Structure formats: C-alpha cells, structure tokens
Figure 1 (cartoon, helix red, strand yellow):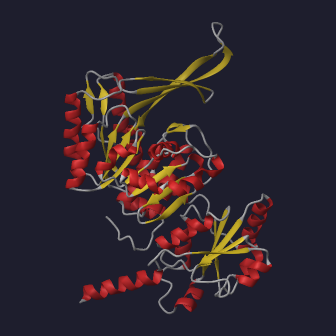
Figure 2 (figure 1 turned 120 degrees about the horizontal axis):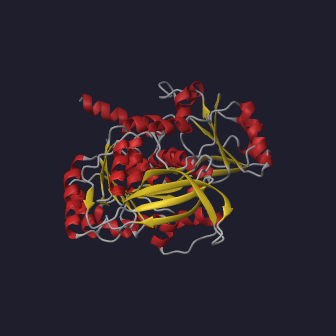
Figure 3 (figure 1 turned 45 degrees about the vertical axis):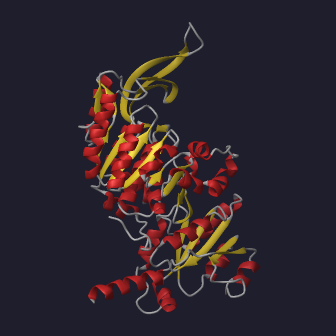
Length: 499
C-alpha cells in the first residue's frame, strides 16, 4: 500500500489506523517475561537497613520483543512472533499471554537447554525497589538457530512488515541477520530494527527504519553526550549520519519526554513533540513506538506522519503502569482529547498566559489545502523558532478568492483536522480575508513566519508586525512541493488514463 512521495500528506491518525488495521506483521527478537511483585512496606528489616515488603499480588506481561508484538496486535495488526524461550513454566506463561493478546506463537522456538528470560520487579506502594533478572542469554544452539531461520523463511514472505526487536540476548544471531538480509534482497518489505546493540550490524538487511534512543544514537555516532538543553540541536546536526552508518531510509531517535527526531534520506529532519502526559512508571514505551512506526510505514504513511502516530501511541503507554500495551482506540481518544482549534478570545487568553511564563510565540498562516511534505517541513521548522506555534488557516471563501474556482479541494474543517494531528502545531484558528492582520494585532507574536517566496519588502504585514515588536522569519520551501503542483500532476494522470 505504498504511496507516491509527492502525494498529499494525510495526518489524520484515525484514518491511518484504519489503513493499518489487518496488516500482517512479523516480530523477531528476544522474548522477556516481565513480572511485577506488588506490595507495601511499613518498616525496615532487622537484619539489614532494607525495607520489608509485604506482597499483595503478582502480575505478568509480555516484555522485550514480546511487548512489541503485543502492541502491534493492540493497534490492529495480525501479528506472528518468532523468538527463543525455554521449555519452562515461564516460557509457557509468556506464550499464553501473547495468545491472549491475539499474537500467533506457533513458530516460537522452545529450547530445552535455555531458561526463559524473566525480569522480576519488586514494588512497594507502586515504587520499584529492585529488579532481578533470570534466564539464558547468549547465542542459540545450532539446532535452535536453524529452527529460527526456518521460521523466517516460512513467515517473512507472507507478512507485510517485519520488526526486529533485539535486546542483545541471542535470538537475533548473525545467522538470523544473514537470513533476513537474503529474504529482503529477494522480496523487500517494510523492515524496522530496534536494537540495543550497534545498528550497523544490520546494514546488509536493506532496513526501512531504525529506532535508537538518544544514548544508542550517541554510541552509534561515537560522540559525547550534550547538555540536556542542547541535545536536540546537536542531534539535528549529526543525526543524518545514522542513515549513512545503518543504510536505513529512516531513523527515528526517541528522546524520552522530548519526543523524537526523524531523519530520512529524502527530506530534512522532523521533530515530533509529545503532549504533556502523566508518567506512571511504564516500561517498554520504546517497543510501542517501534510497533506503531512500523504499522504506519507499512500503511504507506510518510516518515513524519508515522512518527506522529508512534509518539501518540508511546504517550498512551507512558500514562500506564508496568509493561503496557496501547490499543488503536486509545490512540484515537488521545488524538481527540483536546482540540487545537480555538476561537480568537480563548486564543488571546492562552497567548497572554504563555507570554507571562516567558514563552516565545510563533505565528504563521496559509491555505494548507492538500497537506504535503513541504508543509510539514515548513511547520516543523517554524515550531523550532519558539515555544508555541499558532497556525491561522484561510477560510474557504478566502481560499477561493486567492486561488480561484475549484479551490479549496478540502473544506476548512477538514484542513484544520488534518493540521491538528501534527504535534508541532499548538493552536489553530480560521480567518477570513487575504491577510490575518486582525489576528496579528490581537496576538502580537514574537515571530511571524512566512515562506521564502516573500521578502521583507514584498510582505504586506511587515510594517504591522515590526510595529508590534515582532520579528519576521522567512523559511525556504521544499523543492517541487506545492499544492498546485500536486493538483496538476493528478489532473495530468487522469488525462493520461483517459487517453
């Protein structure tokens, strides 16, 4: 279900989830049983200065690559799982939990000489006191490696996408990597790798996307960690090297509470901004991000839009406890929780509030009729110029006056809904007329952003913005990306088909 890279950008996360539903996804990697021993503590032990925990319950969840599989199933995919576990009660329980999530586990290899990886956390009053790990890591036995490769050869050809979730415990051996590389050469498909080890090991696999976290990206690039306030800027300068080192088309670097940075060969960097959410001590948000990113790419989404879906899914599980799974319905509810579309009075109040906090207000406007890569790059760069990005969108009547008969293609309500799915956009407001002068007077933005087809001399709003104390910033357009060009190409394609 691939889409042409010049096609209009659909950022409606709900429709993207609809397109992803039913896709067949294979998850390959290290299965872990996550165990949570819940209890309370009121006193210290007499034998040592440690708390005494009175256990009240035990919960178990699929962890590691198994968590990635459970999340892909929760988001609507048909999921098969290929991994290595022991012939022990923990292995049986892990497979049972996956089956409960709707994951097919028929090809999971049960090894007689291994113990299933298990991570047990002791909690007192919802706080983790300690974790103890059990199980067998290291390379699989030759016969188990052979069975894993047999599973790959049977499963990869009948799946739309493959996730490699490598926690470094041995399932993703060099022979498994070589087998996947051969299958990709024979019949390429969406392949996403999330690995605790050097991602350069996977270069031969024709990887679609890699998903390191910030620390893993630094290790891959062999650079030192920056101060927290500078790490996004530093990553933006060097992140494209990840594509060179790994051979991937897309790199999604997760930044914990700061969202994610997306790098791709065919476009500039893009940053996904998370909504503020309650952190409840969840484990495995990175697995959720990887699963959602893979599904979106397999459904034909462009990398920035795929990252928006992945960030939304990760934010959902961050608000949960333990090793959590996100469902498609939860993402829909999360995306619709707070409308960004706002009237002028409420917007003015919010701007006053943010300005009192020392926030920098950025404002831009446009028709945004068919949202495309150029728009998304432009808005992402505009957001980076301040703290709050307000986008004013021309009404249907003003678009028609500016662009002529037959425009807009999409009504204002649809254009606002699609823009609202972009995390770089904080607030949206419609306006009538050719220029948003009334809104500029009302909001007094610190930065007014326009495209490079204007200059300071030709921009009608220059004197007004500067008289209000604001600065004007011109951003270049992405080459050969415009709504008019997209419409022209569609019309030409229709004429050619008719001929």
